[in-house]
Image 1 (tube, one colour):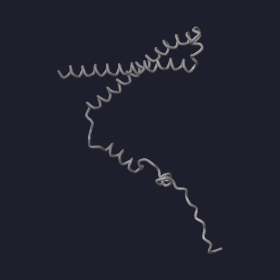
Image 2 (image 1 turned 45 degrees about the vertical axis):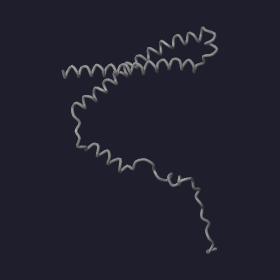
Image 3 (image 1 turned 30 degrees about the vertical axis):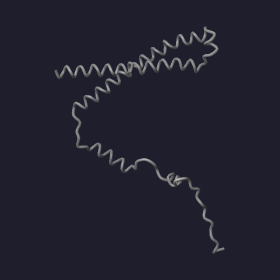
Image 4 (image 1 turned 180 degrees about the horizontal axis):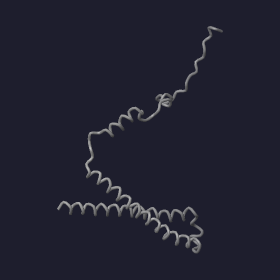
Length: 139
């Protein structure tokens, strides 16, 4: 008994050593990540006040666009919901073919389209206004 060979358990191996990869963590090691963050903070490049103003204006323009988009989406939701719900109650074809999911898709599709179109227009118009103001300031 003492001299019997013990049976070794074979690990089930996968292609390309995938079993070994499972034991290691994937991603960036925390030491390297911390060095990168500190390097970015202690950078010798100091942003100019003009860059800070640009970032502030960009945030302002995006917030302005989001506000206008939410308003437009709310209006579009009401404007598309009322006729959709009336049609489902009154028109026989709509009553037979438009279930709750179809009604929700009609209403949300109109709202989403109104949101993104309005945000895009508002941000572009704000950027155009800003570029004209800067051009007038230099001339």
